Length: 412
Image (cartoon, rainbow, N blue to C red; front, top):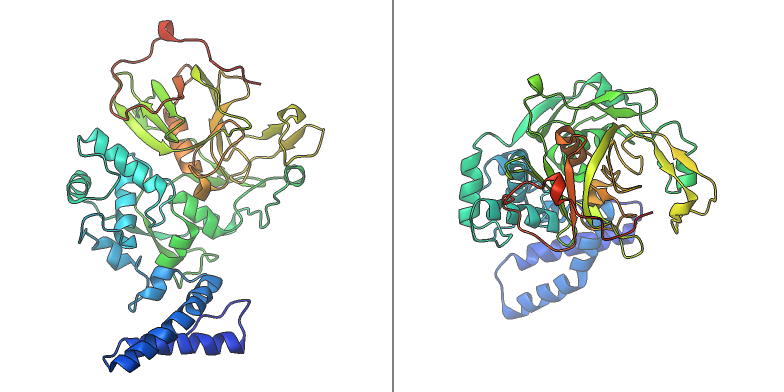
């Protein structure tokens, strides 16, 4: 049935049914006259059909599949390349989960062949001495799948905490109005669960089309990735600092911020790559600094303090503002403070925009990637902000304090 939308009408539904009729007609053999007629109908009505699905929020991949969403659980588990550079959404979801577990973050797991996915593929190819194409070719898939043969999806029963928040049902866009709220939590259980398991809200809904996310105890299908630990606070859901057993987790010696390539990379003291993340950093108006700095401290669930001297175009107030903690706080759930004054690496309330938009000078990651990085960072960890693209492969030698140059930019 042609999907309804807020802009639905009898005429729209009539045209939608005519479009579906045209599709069925063109699927049957006939004379040249019939074929010509059907293609004229398709040219006339397919834009209407596509607009109707877009207006209703139905995924185009869903509309094209006669057997349900392309990203159904069974199709993801069974996904394997059928052709070079296969862009099947189910295959991309599976590859994104495998990349995430291998510490090559694709950002938000969404089943799309986007820039962040291709960047993660390129990084994986480079580290594994494969031709660097950014495409999911057979050799890349073989290397990725051989590293990890565990199922990519799992079942999760939502908890009372997942369903009860606390939530901030409406997040204002103006910083002045944000500052009036007691917290900036998730807007719903769906937004919370999506961040917990590193995927887009749209994909979470497509994997669980009949799930009641508002009810505790609902069993849902989610990516089998390291879960972002959360807890309920007074006015917001809070991130829980990761505690590695016996403090045996990896420790970052060097963090490289590759500004041209829009990524952040983490290396241990021997120069081995620990993690790769897509990132948003700076703008023409307020570029990120360049040079070598250090991590000063890590703040979990931070407040955000706005000073009028920052002179953001979209903020008119001349007073200092304090925005309370929460995942929808402008700096997300964690702030990694740098020795570059007023600059840091932090989370983001909009994971879908990472690597695609600009920032006010700092380095933004998804909340879950920022949490992962914060668990490895220590006061004194070296942070290199580079103006030229550099290889992802292991560093030739760790940066020592004696090698630390002065910053090439004056920062506010």
